Image (cartoon, rainbow, N blue to C red):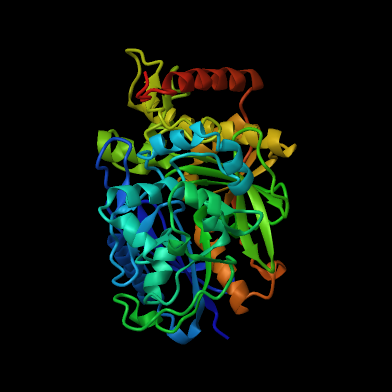
Length: 502
């Protein structure tokens, strides 16, 4: 019996590969960063070929580090940055344009045009989403509109669309499989999440031929086998691909949030708060998203989600663009040298604001500066901005679901920060629990694949990896409200900053 599952975790700034054993423990990890492309302010792109190369290299390196033989690997699970859009040639596999990343705001005018047609309610009813440049639909339209001859080629069946999971699987199977899973399909703004089909009306309005869209499968399913002759993947030829899931849904699964009402927050490039709502497709009254959590075990389960677009990316901005810190950990160290941010607030709306504001024209703002504001105050304000954005999401989610979060499970790269998770516990006034395995996203993909392949018999048989640490709230209630009121004032200064109508 094969004892290992390889998870490929293709993220916004890097591609990772993690090999898990039967106990759910990572035995080898490899990571490769790739360049971010910013053609214009608010535009974000990736080179799909660089994504592919970085992911295959990560897989190859992880296998080499582990020393595990091919016969011991049961299969592959894939998890990915969601909404990021690739369009490529069916015949050659060559992308016709760079991948347009989920953060990219270039299609804000297209979204405004859809909203002006009164389509907001229809989009929410069918897709569970709000009309926003965040999602794949208007990104596909933009590529078809701006690459010469693309729409005609799409109509002739010469072009294919995929989110990153689809792009990887198509390449790993040498074009044999053009597929996605329910969780990723539900993030395109083209998928009927209750009817489980591509919505022909939305595709028609955006002039997107349905023939270029992938087949939609359960998240835990047979997606084909890794083909022979793929550079960097030679060692995996013949290994089944048995799972695909968007990164946030995979993290929810990896954190074992199976009961309705359980919630997790992933602290990555952005923050993604997600609550399982079971088999109930619950529409939000507070501008949160209804999304398919996964298809597994013969049923579809749903979740409520709130997204903050720029959180960990704000720490990276301090490091890479401003040079105020040399390492991400230095942000923590600086922030811990001061008791508060000295009245400063930072709103990291580099690419707009997500839930519950959904303002495509918001931009980054720092307010409350005085002559006494120093690097440490700025570092603390950046960490506080992450915790405040999650508080915004949690408040909306509690109102929608009727239950406040009592225990928040935390994962993702920035969850290693003690000061951040303590701030989060203080501002949410709830217990925040750091995952014992910080690779929750990759673990979820491994669990979904392993369930399909018989590595684990059922959900009850999945390893419980334990919690690393719990953070209890310590902040006085009046101070919590005072600080949060200041945050909301700062957000108001950032809203609608880049609206071309002003």
